[in-house]
Image 1: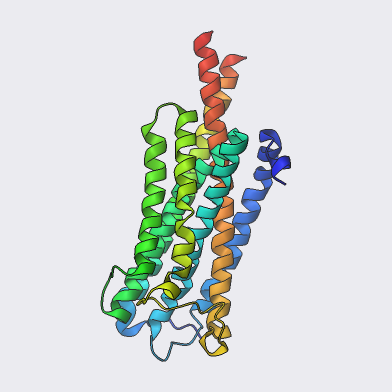
Image 2: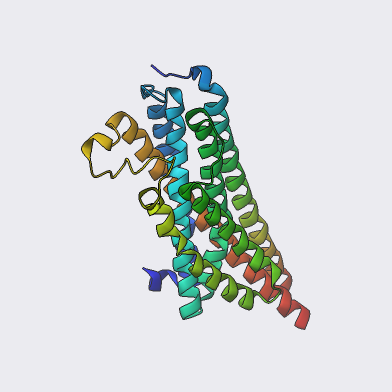
Length: 50
Length: 240
């Protein structure tokens, strides 16, 4: 059913998917890390203020 | 919609629910897109390299779509001087740069077996490279100016100038002789259009990429809003 055999083009097809997966992984990790970091910073500063 | 979301508190309440919803939708669409990508038949000319199309074309489309988003946010930031629009523009840039880089890299990996070369100074490829340089320039300009307001205004002007490049990218394959193929999704002639076995996975992946971009953009705008709030609180603490 699935065709995972890219034959002589495997050296081009699989790196394309791997690089795309890495890029998505970085975008997700970086976005969530930034949001978490600055949310904690605001919470800590708000707590210190009150 | 813009007026409703222009209020930072309303935006934060909306994005808190919308970001995971878009993220979940992206996972479903991309999973379905990958499923159809690997049951699609090999192309009679391009063989298995046709599967690169399912990740290359959505990346190229997102490169341009995200730049339109940057342009709209920059315009709203310049005209209405709205801080949330400026935050949205800043949050958009790294994502747009990554999608543009993906379009260039996957394009090169598709080009080598089909054209015999990783790169040519062709109108389509060169104009997408110019788009990538605009993303890098936008981020570099923001980082180079200490005053965030001035940095935002200067970068917004640069972003608006870069909008001129979008029609050049889109019409480059019609205006100049190009190694790059012409339009196939919205081709005028029926024989040039993609068959459903290729159109379905590409459409699913394009919608999935768009949902992923929407989710990540909202998350990054939220981070930017918190960063600015933290800066205000730090300033208040320093003033005593």
